[in-house]
Image 1 (cartoon, rainbow, N blue to C red):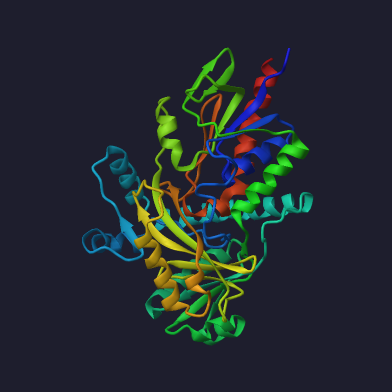
Image 2 (image 1 turned 90 degrees about the vertical axis):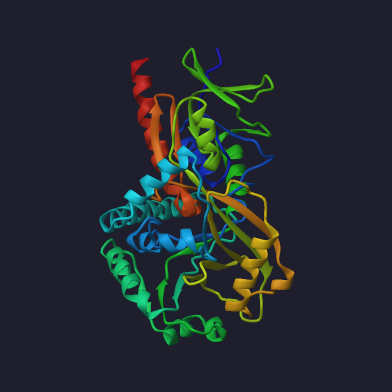
Length: 412
């Protein structure tokens, strides 16, 4: 008798492939399933590429709460809120508002920081075993501020993280320019926070290379072009159907479907508080003053990342936009914002690899890692830090599944 697979992982973005790895290295038999032709082709494809281990600030905060009336009535070039009467959004919004207190902001930020540190350790352990090629570099990061009023609050958060061992430095504009000469042409900087240990890497290349390791060295099965349409449990197995009489089964299933999770899980009565935050990116050749260190511009809400000899620029946050097509108007706005602030960082007229992705936001800005049923495990809701959280969230999910798996084996 053929032994059934231990786990089917639904979704092959950075969350899915890292979850498959965390399970396979523990000795479980695994299959990974995705509707696309390969791994990392949706939200993971061309995101900001920053592994922002130290920048885990929760979105819900007293500062954002104070801005909400303006955002709702006047709008903001960096953050666009799409209000709707959808009961799921209302429920999500109420949970989000509940997390806008100072105490919850602090707790959520520190919880995210803990997960990020786990993720960094897990990635370093992976790379020591399997040296993957994905433009990985410990480039460090500069968070730029243009308003003196925001610096004290930013410094307080820096000190809060410092008590957890995070190394960051508050810098004057001159000090920031000394470590990143490309900022000489950037005007209006009031101060900066420098994090030397933050990293960068191409998430799509990571997915492709890690998948190859999974297949070649761990025997992981792949099922691409398979759009999971239904799930049912029969005779001790979870069975995934695609609506075309094809079926994949295993003892357990790990749901890593990103923004697709709410709809898929809703069919089997499992509700998850996830709402989309659409973002954009483009990649361009280096300009004459391309920054070496990753940059986050807090005023314009954009990031610049030196990625494998090219510049990756990402930004724009549209809460509630479910359309993942690249809107040329929004893309032009992103290019214009980056060019106006960092005119020599990239050759903006040569921008290519344009992308839009739907980041799956939870009200707490923390992933949902849970076991709603004994045979169903969730690793969803990573928001704008999916690339940063991926390895740590995968380890937590695998530990959860292993505990369940060991218990069931003992019962047998």
